[in-house]
Image 1 (cartoon, rainbow, N blue to C red):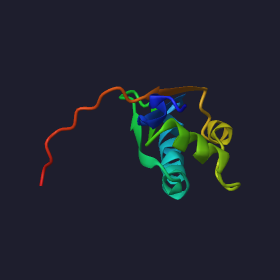
Image 2: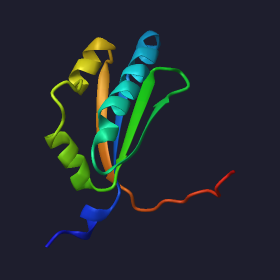
Image 3: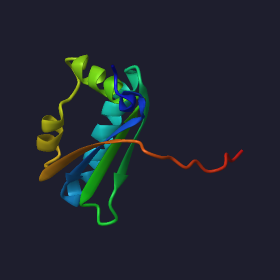
Image 4: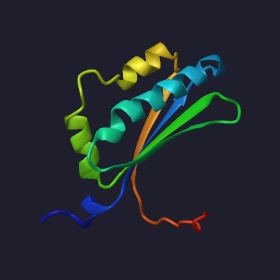
Length: 113
């Protein structure tokens, strides 16, 4: 029996600590990765990149339709896809914190035309 949670939206957050001089390059690399690879996998919902006000932290967020969709994307990742360790080295991030969450609730604002 598949647990009900297997069908809930699933989010991944990765926070990078980075020197402000390297922050823009990391943001560009993450956006490129999401555009070229991540968004092509079934179950992908959206991705975003945020930067802290002091420019010392970058937060990436990827949302999937389910945890299983996320797992399948990792299993089928293309060989040319840049790995996270490579991104850390290239953009001189001093740390990376990975967290994953199931969406428990979501409030959506009114649509603007």
